[in-house]
Image (cartoon, rainbow, N blue to C red):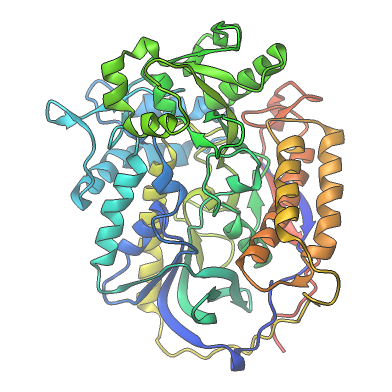
Length: 549
């Protein structure tokens, strides 16, 4: 599969000016950026003799991994087969999956799940065995879950406890990674910031990037507010290619109550038997796909969007009555509590839902070892494009990918770091300054961020077309010319600059894919074209700063 290649200018190499003579330095053998399932699993694999630093921009408990409800997929039932899990993954990916990657990850799944149990994860059980549920796109019940509908919370509790108990792992919370540091085309650590110590250079023999996704770039999303595509952006500025960035997965069922924050309603609700109905009470999914509510996410999201248009109603509804009250209370305690806070009783009331941005399928191109195109840099989890998900991720394959590739990155980075000398000379990096923040009118960063998220939702959302995408590109370029060239003072500004850069990359990739495939729906190119089953790779150009004096 030969990639199509397009270019997007970064406008600058580093977001802030710096001089190593004026910034404190710290040294690690391995630097892990991100504390979700991929980053934590990577850190746990580093040799105990090596100093490992894990950097998270919020509390370590805040991540897409910890917010995951449904579960982790794996062939655990003797009646299930690896070939079935592989086939389901490939079918969901709509011709874009890497078959070898899918085989590798699926076969790793049972052992990785058993490993999570050894870490202390308490998966739900039935008669002493792991309880397995069915989710959309799966042909067999193979999704292990915990705490009913709070799997990520339980998995990360166990993994984080093990990391905190490890003497060689230092965890720096509420520490924002501004940029990767490179010298002569090699990654050698990162520039980070926290409110207590300001900026710090963290020099590392090997760096592993596990920063998660980009859902917060959209007005409607299941993601926490921290999911601002930071890892995608800083890797792109450092020279890594981004691949398949047009593929943002929209989860079909997000709680929709005007004025409230958005909350995920797990795929497992439909897997257990809930029906989707429109404003008139009509169960509509049979009009769109024979699998009805258990069709893959892209199909269900697009069907809901079309049904909302037909009924001129802002949402559709989940009817959980077919599941039964006792089963609902036992299986979905978290969702039940969340909905009750808004006056919705999921045992009797229909739950208002609509799609929201959920999972960034595109990302940094990696090989099966987790190696990026930048020497010294590895990557795992949602920040990557491994070839597992293709054009649409199969439900509950995300935690699986994170733990499989986190382990692989940890192994490889550890082995290389063990062979590298402790003698390290700080390279004479100097970052050129941008436009001073106060050189012009004060920027209302919150207003710009809200405008960007609304623009992405309208024009680079579930349904796309050439005029809207070009409008989005023009608007993003306009904003970038006066936002991204400035030296901003803290995480709010740096997140906005990252979101703006990645938004420009996503819009450019969406323009380039002139077909509909998986999560990428072009109303002006509605057909899937067999010959177009190829990756779109975005390369950074026109960096205007120097790396060294």
